[in-house]
Image 1: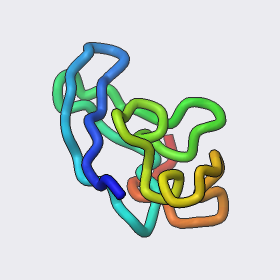
Image 2: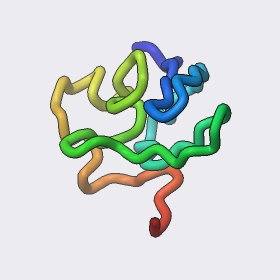
Image 3: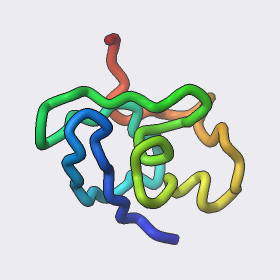
Length: 79
């Protein structure tokens, strides 16, 4: 299982390699280039599945697209 994924900001193209959590989904991520708050695309469970080079650990393990509909979310906040 890969725990590193490179996120690419759709607004500015900035790339940052991050370590993915194994016990939760990262629902929000603030781009380190432009500050844009990234959220998962429709149908994706987290920012790594939407903007990362590698999908999140639960997707890697199960291959299912809704890995954490009932689970914890890292960075969950009202937008």
